[in-house]
Every structure is written in C-alpha cells, then in structure tokens.
Amino acid sequence: MTRSIFLVSFPQEEEHALHWWHVEDRALIAYGCDQDPLAAAGIFAHEDADNPLQIIALISSKESVVRWHDTPEGATEKQALSAVILEAKTQSLNPDDLHVAAAQDGEIFTTATLATGTLVSGLTHLQSLGIDPDCIVPAGFLLGGLEDRTVAADFGFDQVLRGPRLIAVDEPLVRNHLVSSASVENLSQVEMESAIASVSASMGPNLRTGSFVKKTKRQLSTEQKKMLIWLFAVLLLTSITIPLVQLYKYYSAADTADEAAMAAATKVIGPAEDLAVAEQQLDEKLLAENLGNNRFTVPASSLFSALQQVPGVSISRISYGGNGLLSVELTAVRNEDINPALIVIQDQGYAVTATPRRDASGLAKADVTVRLP
Image (tube, rainbow, N blue to C red; front, side, top):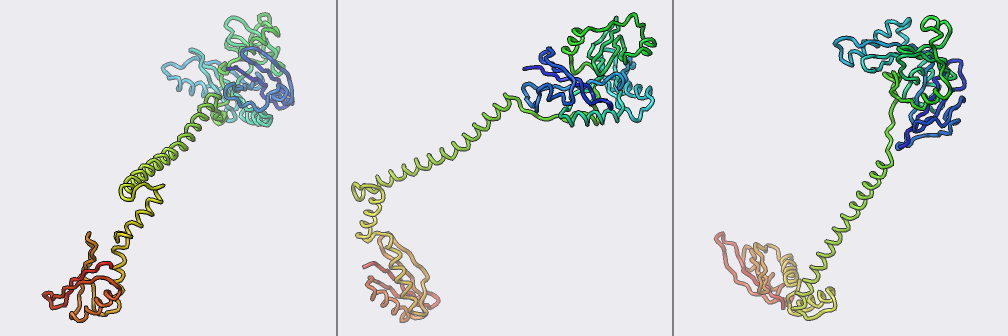
C-alpha cells in the first residue's frame, strides 16, 4: 500500500496562495505554492481506500503557541492531558477564544494553541478548496525533537526556530531573547526536504480535536469490495438455487406419482399410450361396468328430485354401500305419503325396494334401496 501524505500551509488572513508538499513512501515528489494546491499537485477526488491520501495542515509559528509541560505527579494520562490543557489556557491572554490540543511524548506533554476564529476561518477556506485535513499541527514539529541544537528553517509561509522545548517564530527579537544567534544553525534545502519526507501524523498535538474533529468517511478497500461482490453472488446463487431445487423435487415427485398411477391403470385396462389416455379408458371401463363416479350422484339426485314433488316426506338417513346400492330411510306421517315418492323414482327406471314400518313415536318409516338400472 502506498503511503501518500499531502502537506499544506494553514491559511492566514493575508494569504491567497498556499504552500504545499506531496510525499509518497517517504519521498518528496512535488511541491509548490498555488491558490488551488490539490489541482496544482494533480490530485482530484482522492477516495482510494487502499491508498488513502492523508492531509496535514501546517500552522505557522506566528499563529500558534507551543508549550512543553512536565507530567503532573500521580495523575493518569487522561488527567494529565486535562491538566496541561488547563495550564496552557491560563497562560494565554485570551483563554475564552482559544483552542488547545495536547500530546504526550514520554514523560513530557506538549500543547499547541490557536485562536478559535483563526481555526474556523482557515478550515472553511481549506474546505472550499476541497481540502479537509486529517491533522492540523504547528509547522515546527516537522523538524523533529532536537536535544542539543537549535535550527532555523524557512518553509516559505513560516520562518521558524526549533530547539529543545522550543518552537517559535524566527525573528531577531525572539533570537536575542530565547537563544544566542551564534548557536542557531540554518537548515539547508536538502535537510528541509528530508524532514518533510519523514513527516508523521503523530509528530505533535493535533488541533483537529473536540468540535473540530474530522468526520470520518467509511470507505471500502478493494479486498472488502471483492468480498461484498462474492457474498452478493453467493446470496444471488442461493436464492435462485433453492426454488430450482424445490421445483425439481416437485416435478420428480409428480413423475413418480404418474408412473405409479400408470402402473396401476395398466393392470386394469392394459397398456396405454400415456396417462391421459389411460385415465380416459379407465373412466370408460368404469362407466361400462356401472362403477364410475356417477354410481352415487345420479340415483341420489333422482331421489332428491322425487322428494321435492312429495311434501311431507323427508330423508332421515342415507348411505351408499360397496354393493352399488343406495340405502335411504324415509320418514312421513303416514306410509301412504311415502308411496308417491317411490313411484316417481321407479318411473325414472330405477330398481326400488321398500320395507315400511313405524317407529316408537308413531311416525311412518320406509327402508328404501335404489339401484341404477
């Protein structure tokens, strides 16, 4: 994975063009000073999750104050950070309009302060150019920690002094007050480019904290995208395969049932061309032998039709036996009332037998059997 970092000077009120440096894999590949730094660097809509572009905005030593603090005794890291931020605010002339960031370096804590208004206006200007920095740090931290010497560097937008526990603007008054001019070394262009190429996002306090923290965008890497595509393909294949398997099982079961029905029909009617022909031949055979589906329905409908013509006669029981007989129990007040119904059925050609009787209540009963002619 390519390590790509884009450094840009944090906008100041009087600035129109911004200094920028493009670093890839610890090598400075381009730099300049332009009103639209990203366009000048040939970077457009960089959203590659596999090779993300990290953007660091550099604050000049004129705008930011950097302080070093010893670790408070007995304090946890979180308590120490809160303590040094409070200490940095109390040492400021305008603590109410101040944004403070802190970072720990071993036993030492470092704070960087910037006016809130300057931070807001600078971020707004950068974002209007399509630049949303991941980090905002003082430019002096590019030079690393110097334990035994003080150096001066000119970044174009900032002339800075860097020494042990020192990051300040390089001006004669500051030199005379803080260091001896004879002990200050001026960094060469090669040394400055080497320092820029070795940049790290964790080199100092990051002012993009609190209400100014960068909103992270979730991005998928190439491997994650491939995995999602594979998962989608598997899900799609599964959703298609399941109904196809069920459909295959259904047709297999239907074919098995058809084969079993064909085998059973062949035993009765002999060989047939297909199941539809076998079913037709079986219906014809049953009808010819008076064993079809109409053995019950035809005589039963004739019986009900006859009873509708004879009021006062009702059916109290009806059954159909395996011998082809329709057995009916008719009920009326008198046996004479039942006879007209039996005559109507006989006139339709059915063979009818009737056994009259009376039940315990005195009602006339007739046990009737009806057979197809």
